[in-house]
Image (tube, rainbow, N blue to C red; front, side, top):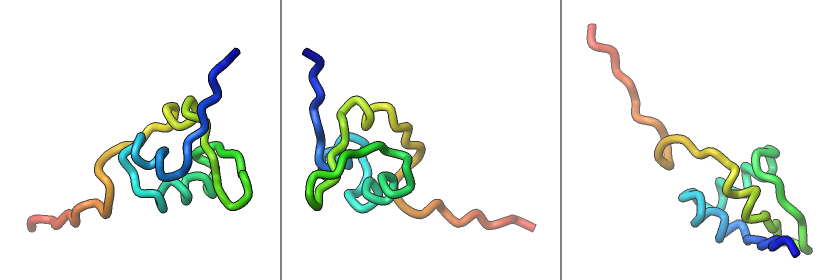
Length: 67
């Protein structure tokens, strides 16, 4: 039988190195597939591992031009 481990948004955030809110936003934007159980979104571990996250968390640094 195939192991279909489901993760909470908090567990998914820890796996990807993101905030819980960012994971919820990615679910709403359709970047991460999830299944709704009551009020909770559950993510298959295999789907979470497919997501590519680039760069650091937070706002990108301000690039000033040197003229």
